[in-house]
Length: 338
Image 1 (spheres, rainbow, N blue to C red):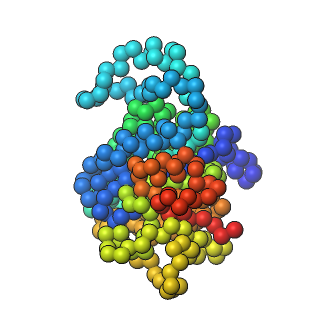
Image 2: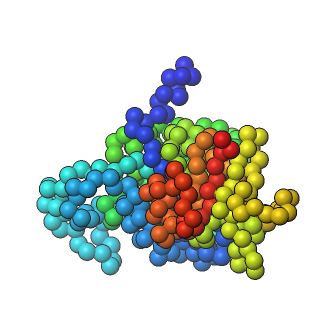
Image 3: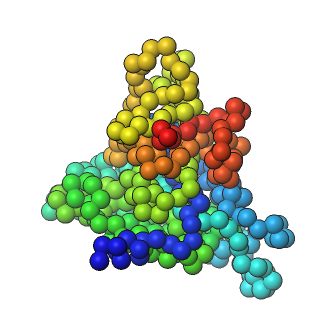
């Protein structure tokens, strides 16, 4: 019975990449939102969407015209008349198979922190109200990301963990059926999941972070590689705003789950990497993100952490780094010690 349950999780089409849109600079900025500016989306989102389209598209027969899929009437965007004629002569999009996961950034974290949703206690009116407010905020961000991808011709589908029935117990995933994600991929869609407020069988409710989601998806769906898009070049030995901060180009994960920096080589082998966490970040900040990335790497899946909307991010998304890491590529690679 267990083998049958496992088989239903597997899409028939292999997953090329899982992409995480993430904040790593502890509130200073954001990959797709301004994390300290309440519910404000960054201009990077448009560039991210364009790069994802380029990385996903494997067909060379396209006319080059991008046919948008957001047909909603919105201020500042063209009317959608005539789209049926455009698609009549457009071959189906041939793309490698991606999944996108995003955090909440400046959407959701403030509501969750103010109400204490991450601590549980749905019997308290403030927590219940905060649960609702948090979900309104994170799902609105998810819709904006789906729309941005759709405008680039990417057939994206928003999927909320709460609505898909994901549950936690003591903040750890207790139930997370990814069969709908697999079915969406097999149907030619790009699932877009997000950090969410979910029910917890122990404490009533909590916040399920995008970092935990991406690790679970990686375990179940076994992508070729994972890319974390951030607002800084990669992982540093200290907050990157501090003097003499060093970019850690390669981190090696060991069999016991511990990790060490292999490039650059520090004279002090006991050198500690310093972390800070934004006051409103209810999902653990940098510590959680590196820990989750290390667990993904332990599965034998390389993780690239790279600055969003740069040539370095496009190269990572396109799979150029799988065989070797060029000297002129700036980012952090986290991989299992083979």
